[in-house]
Length: 89
Image (cartoon, rainbow, N blue to C red; front, top):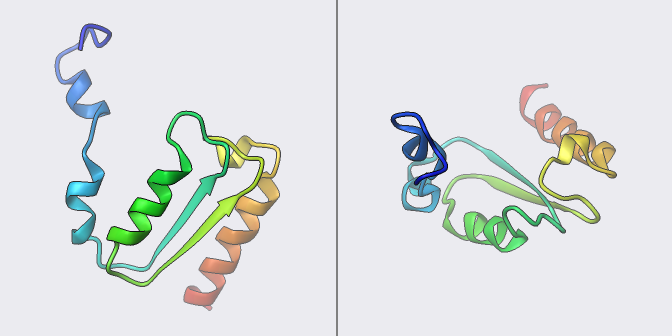
């Protein structure tokens, strides 16, 4: 890609996650903003379908791509804490 002016830039940015997601074997929490304009919520649904491990999906209404900085960031933190408490305590 022309927008990456350094060697390996595009290879480090564009990754086909779905091709490798079957290799994930650890419990996984998917948190996605419902109005993510960079990577649409359909990507979260696809990841959820492809993951074969224990998983939970949290779609956060009103949030975009940067959930921890979005309007409903408390929902992101709550989902994360809940997920971790269930596995670490």
